[in-house]
Length: 115
Length: 114
Image 1 (cartoon, chains in turn brown, orange):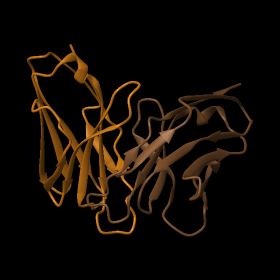
Image 2 (cartoon, chains in turn cyan, orange):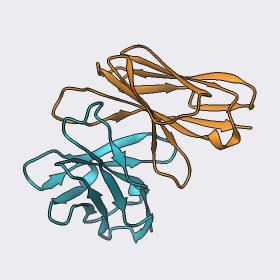
Image 3 (cartoon, chains in turn purple, orange):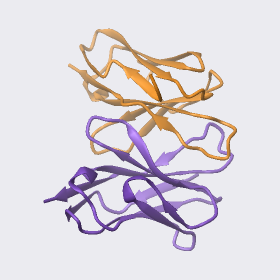
């Protein structure tokens, strides 16, 4: 079985500053990794995903994440945040060939961007 | 309509009411999911349907009853709910068989049980 730990429940940051949202996972098999974003009163939207290959994954809205197998981490980064990035961010893990394509989500990290 | 749609977006119901949540996916996927999102708690997977058959039911109380009449539609029938069932209910869809487990989410139904 897989599990995900998002190390920070809230991350406050000033506009135009860099940000890193941390995610660690646990799995006995190889994994697919995802970051989703949820804006207030909306569903989840995919930011980026790692399936295989290059460990640096680029996503939408200037976000990127790096897969580190030895540290079992998949941290999300953005070099310069905007007010509009204020949202909740979820890291998720899934096992290839998992029947039903089931995802296991972390508890979420609320990113608050201040002016 | 594109993606995954959910209706209604907001629902207030009493504990003795019966109501249904509807989800429709326009992506041609063959799997659909119901999640419950409560404040301060991780997303809880409630039900998974693959090829219109229920493949997972994560110990959800019987007052929640899912229905998947075809690969595009998913319902969640609600009856005699409790105040602690108030939450955002999210529907998602996915294509089983691809080398990718991505799920696509709807906007959710905000349910309040009085």
